[in-house]
Image (cartoon, rainbow over all chains, first blue to last red):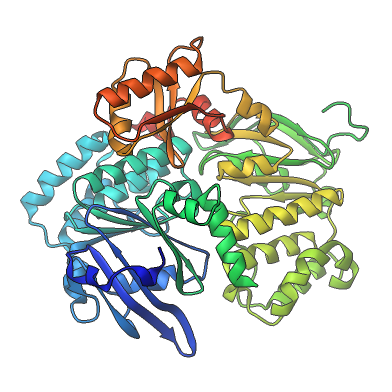
Length: 255
Length: 319
């Protein structure tokens, strides 16, 4: 159940994400402290933790943006320290704070990201048409992104993050502030992508969403304090909800 | 609510606000009792921030009126403003000033001192004091919000208007913040607060569900949850996503959606018994080959009620 109990063999077993003793220090402060976990291909993995617990630092390492101080990790089979550029081509990323350019049109955004990920003109054209059709956004294709309601913008941003068919997609608080029905529609997009084989690592402050994940980890002060399926964790910690577990773990450490 | 001896702390009557051709508030009427903890619950873009700005005397309504502490938010703004503590939705303290400097600044703007407000801010300030010298911009999300609350209290207002104080803050800090609001309420403070988190509705005395500039319902969270008037079932199955898609095809289904660890299923028949429906749904899923099927009646929450009342989701009209 704990991070340490996860086998380091995962790194060789074709896991989509495999981290072993991954560590990052900033001066004397250890932001991420020997975390070990793996995420299977097609899994929806909830990456939880209080503000300042080390989630963002860990995600920056896994997305090839920040070198680890020690330990190792592979993402989509590539080493984060030596093959960061390979990783960047094979992952998607979306956050609530940054996703699409608001003063570009929907079509321009798709074209921009398609170009960044090296898709050809024809591929971009085909995938744009398919995406607009699936989201029911054809009528808004040439309007500015800022004019689209938030819920649709988030769904569009997710689809754009999947445009280059990445093996792993990182979602950082993708549903903040959207209404309860749109939030659930967003999760159906996540399930759909996972069912098609995409691996999803997602952070959220909505604790009910933690229960939508196949497995979750909860980071506390740089360490993984709990790891497992939501049902396993509730059983082993004898708590009624992940919300209660989250609060308990964070408070135990604060003492 | 009319039995209270004191006059209401807030009365809004048919408030309207338009930005160009876009309606932000449509016929919003409600009242908040003195000493009440009253919540506006709803998604971004629902009009919460516009409403709070009008109540805080920072924006003029297009039509309708509102009175706070018995004073009109348009005509009496100068006498009203010092009596209101307002915490805007965006972090709006000075990030380059320290904790202490921010507090001193907001105290001096209202012609008072931290010492004069000590009793009122003590429970919150005691948590901030160890960080007196830290720049506000370097605080954690939860501590920033506590400092903002402290700054909103430092001139000893009679009512707090808190616009999304817990948005983007982790679950632990959210709980601590609501505990502080509970303490303030017990000391007699009237608190009007907004949140996009449905689970926080239960921390309020009464809530108004808000979407697209309108109030969908105003009542105690218990009565709003209880207003959900159809049989509601919690469905467990091994492959939840495929079970969800399968149930969408079942003709008896009115709605089915993920809810925590289960699916919530609403039957289209208002008069059928929940137990009988549960048996039918379980049989349907088992016949479709799903493993680990468990179906049992569930107690509706405020979020179920919100989903039932909101009809089409945000932005659906754009599709």
